[in-house]
Image (cartoon, helix red, strand yellow):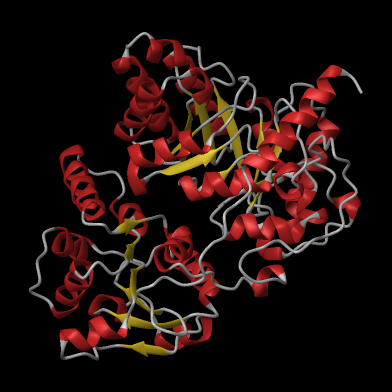
Amino acid sequence: MDNKNLIELITREVLSTFNKPSAKPQTAPSLKQGGANVLVVLTGVSNMREVFYREIEKLSGAKYDILLSDGAKAVFDKNELASKTRAANIHTSFQYSDRSEFLNKYDAVVLAFMSLSALTHISSLNTDSMVCNYLVWHMISKKPLIVSAEPLLNQIGDTRPAIMREINQKIAKLSEFGVSVVPLAQICGALERACGEIYPYSALTGNSGGQAAQTACTAPAGCMSCGHCVVKRENAVNVIKDNGAARISSNPGVEALGGKFDARLAKMIDHTLLKPDAKQSDIDKLCSEASKYKFASVCVNPGWVKYCAEKLAGSGVMVCTVVGFPLGATSTSAKACETVQAIADGADEIDMVINIGALKSGNLQLVEEDIRQVVRAAGGKTVKVILETSLLTDDEKAAACRLSKNARAHFVKTSTGFGGGGATAADIALMRKTVGPEMGVKASGGVRDLKTAQEMIAAGATRVGASASVAIVSGAANDSKGY
């Protein structure tokens, strides 16, 4: 065994020992015998309905009721809710005339679609409506209140900066009050942390408590990240998805393995090929597999965007590409031109690299304008800003997040995968704290095992990048240097 392999083996063993998870309590002292009673409140904001249904499915073993506000009655069909959820009761009017009865009934409340009215009332402790009155007192009683502002922010869209600042301040006030403000796809994780319970995931994983069922994988201990775990380790990939990852990457070649995986999982997969030596035959395979299995997207270098868009036309598969990649050192006008061309060629998502040198020089105005011009050039398409966190101090990371938010980008992302360092849980936590709940946070690069992926998601990541592949779900070492 050479020195490199010996060092790698020792490092893996040390990390394995250090990272052993502590036992998680099954119940919290404040909960009733038999588990938590949860109330899920729905308002008239419903633009992420399918995300909600996927998330609420995870509560299949919990005791929960659904309450429809007056606004929700106009957009949610009670029969649809009954068929797509396992709520014990679906209320269209408030059932409790006495506040103490309500406080004794429910251990936790989830406001899945927080409306602007609810945000304004709760953040100002305004109790002039019955529902808000009880929610405020639930919060005052130090019981878990979990809200998602994501659908509301999507509904508001691009508005005046002064209005957005006011909304962000109200959301920040909720956090100060002890409210858990999380992305819609992380509601169940927040409930677990708040209530000390583990909800069953048996419908998806064949196990309970979110633990991955063991599946056959012939990858050696020195796994080279084949990117085929969506076939080889489907159950383990489902665990990552159910912990909050919105996208999972895969590489060409899954079709040759039989491609037998859950159709629900396929919609989460970014089929990725960013290697500089990719041939047309490789791109053909990438697109063919993405189209056949209805993957969410393919992610390719700009020169392949038009080709992929034409091949995938009508398939429902998005095309993602990169701008200023991987160094971020091109001019703002060059990045904007790249973006315009990519969108014209058919790109649906843009991953841009921040101007790292300008950030480290303190030229924050240039950095923000660099991002803003790409966002404008994208014309409403999703823009993710890659920070390359391994090259930045914590202050620089926080500044980059604020600038990205000011420039109206949709995501901040840790790494290119080519920069010599990747995501850490500390970076994700810092980024999530800085941008708040209204932006996505993507962990990419250095996410090399299941435990690391779970740490990223627990820290606030809403997507896991290209390393959410073999190594994440197999627990093996990953020596790959890029995408």
